[in-house]
Length: 393
Image 1 (cartoon, rainbow, N blue to C red):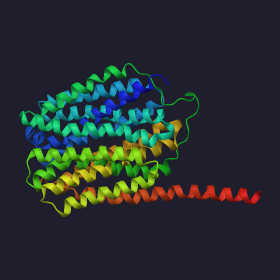
Image 2 (image 1 turned 135 degrees about the vertical axis):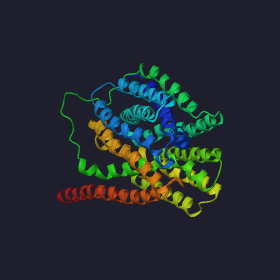
Image 3 (image 1 turned 180 degrees about the vertical axis):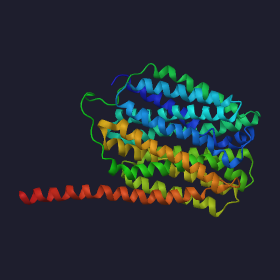
């Protein structure tokens, strides 16, 4: 495949932008609520519109990835993300701001699914490693996002964070216009591989809970820290950045240890860390240091979950990777619509509603056990077949 290195580096840059775009709104919930005169607990509307549109985006773009040159989808995605941020930063009224979040979400969905599918198609033998490496760059962007907000708040204009991110994002149209890649390398006129959707239901539930967990924790950790521990906004955004530092570190470590662990084992360890981190935050609610440590631990646990699960999905249906990945990622994105909103209701403006995240971690752990058992019969049948052959000999 031509220009594979350029495509990969461009996808890395896009994921930095994706991480920034995914972490700007949460740390500015209080500023958005004040600007548009809405209760703080309703600030989740902004991420709701963003990830609601993202759900639609990943479904559409996922299907198109199996049919079109990915360059158009990648370039269009960054164009929508940047444009949406510019609308949001200059919105005079709440409806216009929500429209900006909607446009941002459509682009977010395109960039969420496209680089994941492209990089997996370039590395079919090591998809889990490649996707964990790609998603490290999401973490880098997510680390930058809250600190960019912190800088903008120090300038008494939180929308500067939106504008700066928009400029960086729009510049990515240039490298994507220079690449060419088709993720479906076979005969595109041939019938599509049938997808066993029933067997993918556990993955759909896992992604739904996980994406909601990642977005919900990252969005509400600033509120949790500032409202419960009465820390400054600087400490709150530090906790948010450390969550994303942990997430990036988790993905780096995952890309190194996957040679010794199975995908399922890695998922179980990761989800246990999420649960431990949130439990720590809830058990010792008033300590700034504990809140910061908890943010890092939860992030470290979150890191490998999404790319590892997505690699498992890609490996199951390589001839329909765009459709399968897009559909399940869309279901996952719906979690980002529901869980942050639910946290807002549970928190009631007094905290970040982190008990919702603890419940999600417990449910995810059960789902991974189901996925493990789902894989076991196939292994057993292989063993039985081998035994039968041996007896036949």
